[in-house]
Image (cartoon, rainbow, N blue to C red):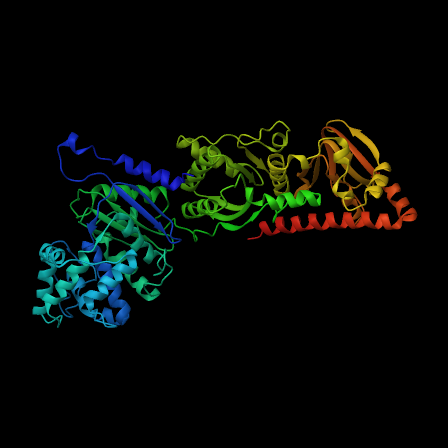
Length: 621
């Protein structure tokens, strides 16, 4: 299934596509390459890209190794944290201390490299290669020719090394230092691999693919602080306003690397540098992504998984409706086809992306997804657009979407956001329409409910109609043999059934009114009934819609012995009723049979209680 993030990245990359060389007469690569790696290891890639050397992007890695070896306090004795005045045109250090201004300048890279020593039988070069291999998940090696070419291209770094040697800011031989730096800078990477490197820092130093810790938390804090205060913020005057995240860039291929802590690593590549030595198209596309996906620090909220409270299969979160053992077994057999997700809190870009991946990890035979969003407090504008795109794709790909909320305000916001982007999310069916018998099984459905138990009941009926239609009552006789009678012997069941009265009701007729005393157990044999109760403030609240084979009336057996809600016919309804008088007579005449009936009622009550507990828990923060 196409995800909204991939869809957006593809559109963005396509908007920067460069005409073919034959049309332009140019021989320089064009277009835009984008890669995004999330802290859970999932990645996206779009557009064009080419393999380039690390170049200046080696600077934060060298600085990280220095902090790993000595700790930040020791590193600060040699390298400051002050943005340099003109890093592109001047080579300088602090006048009094001879410290490099920061670890991203040429002098800072040289100073950091001198702090990295051989360890564990590996010299500095071998350790640089080992780090690159760990980050890139492949064996990395650099030829002498490539290293010499890189060294020759970095005249400023060479000048910085000899300058620092001349003022005794470093003791090491500049030639050796420069050789080691050049070898790391010469490591070839593509845009996807750069996004993985960024995601290691976003994930607190843990590699999102391998789960191995690459850098300590102290090192990550130091590197991200460096990139925040001395990175691209010093080269792009609008960086803090339009991006705001730790970032660094290389002239090689016009590459930009950005870290969104706790969320993702991002890399972009596009030729054509601006006056600050940054890819012009890459920076423009980055600003677009930050706005579309809420990556600015002022907007990033919560961890990616914070919106997902939990999710169940249909057999783990049934509606609470009275069902036969055979039906419950059918739910277990086909449990993978229906899942329920409980969502809560604020939903932004990161949360939507994480939820999409949770759905993507569900079984391939998933057919119906129910989402309980009653505890969602807000959905950001960009997230609404992404959700609209995802719902549209999901429905088109054959997945039923069932939404439960107190009202339709959030859903309408999502539909409106989709419409603003040209994405149509069709109007959902409501309760009264969803349970109609002519709702087709061969087309996907988008349904809205205000009650979770009602939503799950619809999902259960949908499952049975698709996979076990023989378990749905086809006649009034089948419906009359409800779960209430399933644990009785055939003779006992027939005896009880013979004691039941047939009663018929017209559309809208009240069958049982709230407050009435117990009047018996009603089994629906045809039609549908609606159970309603009273919510806070006296507002009428629909609780459940019952269909043939289901029972009602038993709740009046509880304290204070009164019907808790009103039962109303939805269309013509036929029921079979085991009256209160008959039940009391059974206790006198056949107490064992009466006991079995009471056990069945108790079992149904506990099933309903379990569903109530789940619903209550879903609303807790």
